[in-house]
Amino acid sequence: MSQGIKRGLSASVSAAALIFATGAATAQEDTLNVYNWSDYIAADTVPKFEEEFGVSVNYDVYDSNEVLEGTLMAGGTGYDVVVPSGSFFQRQIEAGIYQKLDKSKLDNWDHLDPQILEQVAQYDPGNEYGVPYMWGTTGIGYNVAMVEERLGADADFDTWDLIFDPETAAKLADCGVTLLDAPTEVFNTARQYLGLDPLSTDEDDLQAAVDLIMEIRPHIRYFHSSQYINDLANGEVCVSMGWSGDVFIAADRAEAGERDVEVAYTIPREGATIWFDIMAIPEGAPHPDNAHKWLNYQMRPEVAAENVNYVWYATANQDALPMIDDDIKNDPAIYPSEEVMESLFVDLPQEPRFARVQTRAWTRVKTGQ
Ligand code: SPD
Image 1 (cartoon, protein in one colour):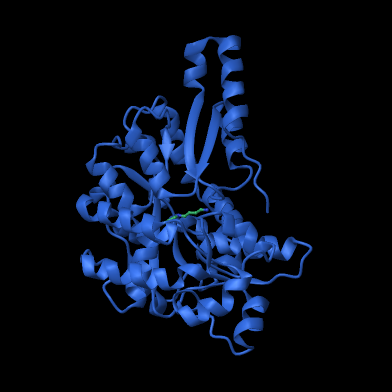
Image 2: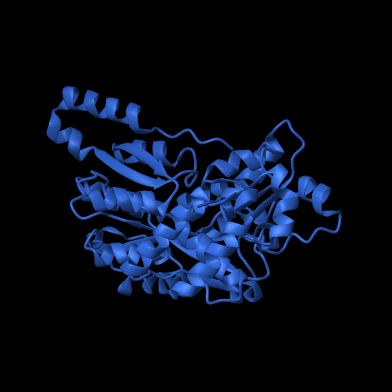
């Protein structure tokens, strides 16, 4: 599973060529600038869209809500479509970063799952600003053999102990334990592991989470939100806090690879984050019309299904389900059972003051000081 997407440099070269060929105005109209998560779209979704609509897509990627938010807050990004996660989306709407959708241009809207729309409406009341794209959980990706080698054949994989129990993490340290570079998610999960409210904004609870992470800090190989995909696939690391679909991509790459590596994903029984990623059009986007075409295209059931079959995340598109591979739609780690759903929590935006305290705590945690 490899992704062949036109990215930054080649894209701007083609945009420049177009200006010479047809004049600046046309080039502008025929362009769309998309900023999405890495590994989050099928290989031929972009070329197919370009061919059908005669629009040249500049497609850039990120692997962190914080990076996306920093870019958006700086303003004047030139992006027409971005894909924040729910809690970030809410505060970005409040900051005036997005324009309202023109739903008269989104005639595929009815393919969306009303239950997902309702979930996303807690961030975006009335679903006025965003189109839900995919959703998933934040759990653990692991290398079955490497973990069993260190914890025994009866190793318990379905627990955050693999990462947050200092004794267990110490046993796994030599094969590589990694954390997402996603402060809110790591702190929320640490609080939940400690039996605290995962969304607590109490500074004592934050300190307890910091203390816990500091204890396992010596056993953490790195903090990164996409590197673990290939590292798990190649057997370079053995346990990663990771996003569901990304771990499945790692498992798929491992299977296709030459090394004998088996990667699996678990939603630990203590509970985990469920999140929703949402496509939106920034205020001042240079090509809002093309942005609406893109959103409407992504909502076609067959396009949504192709994306899911490629990236292993659950879709917000209910009419795509019949076209989704059975091993994806029947996998409870991708579409969790009601019982597991009960153990998941949704992230909510934090007060700016607490967010700042948490960001400082994150720097301490990452540097280990
Ligand atoms: N490779 C795609 C990753 C998408 C991750 N979305 C992150 C949600 C975080 N809350």
